[in-house]
Image (cartoon, rainbow over all chains, first blue to last red; front, top):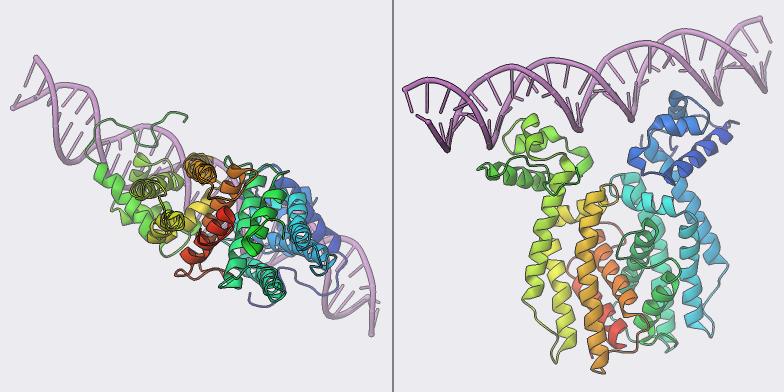
Length: 208
Length: 208
DNA sequence: CAGGCTATCGACACCGTGTCGAGAAAGTCG
DNA sequence: CGACTTTCTCGACACGGTGTCGATAGCCTG
């Protein structure tokens, strides 16, 4: 249970397709209703296997979410890697960075909402999310420090703490927007608002 | 189901104490483990009644959460009412306002975390939360506008959108802190950090 | 072809939920 | 006081979803 193999048993199978089919099936079902309302039965049916066969590939529904999380995180990291460092247009750089999250999470809205919810219950999910979001927090914090050294950012007492808060804001704002909650931002204004708050918090002005 | 009577049957009973006992029992149990791991059995036992008797007072575990939510919201509103309007120390005013949330939510950490999670699943909970947090968003937005009219706040394109984002940040930061997530703020630094981000976002400087 | 792996299935036991109808306790009115 | 109604409690039931097990089928490899 504590080993690194996550659900899957064997070593070099060809039924990788089935595994992917399961993950895809769950993502499809999540478009319609929350995870709690989805029975393993239905996921299995969506992947064209029996319920018991499902348990051959994953230990539980929740375990499938880990795969979904990995997919999304990989997309985000890929997007971030293509941006580089902030040059002479820091506001544009921050906006682009936030845009990666908006785009990737937006492309998988149902998954984002589900992950945010399930994280509270599933310890493995929480740990994995913590690891990944910790990296983004680090990246944000070190960039703030660098911008401060350059004399562009305002004086911030604890850059890392501020970074935690800003990233928390993004997460919650995105999830609320995707979930269609009532006091929430419209999908098309999310990026503008977040970028504005980030830049003002970091530089003291929205356009440094 | 769509009537306003939430679970309870009769009209003028004396078993109100039982109802409160149930709510208290759940809050106590939530200190230890998440809602999903708590059976109705145990809540009933905590209130010294049988499981079936529980269903006389509430339709489900989740219905008890609504009561818990109402309690917390009442405390917050009470705290906010005691603050008044921002006078000549706007930074202090914002800090006090945020402090109310930090204090009340902090006094009911387990409940806060549970509500944040259950909101995704329970429609009634989501609606009620939306209604309440919508009021706080309105309050924030109108105060920002007033501060702008006074010439103190910076020029903000969409005060309400900014208000949504800032309130979202608070919520997520508090829950993450209470839940002990890894990239999270320590309980004692939460207020400082949040107040700093709020004031900088609104005024362009942490101490207007 | 024998043996070991991957993969699939049906059947089973378990647990929590929500509902129902039968009553006990207490309060009300003739 | 006794008959009734209301408030409240309980045990028993059916249902549905979960996770596990052992049997077995296909397949590659030596």
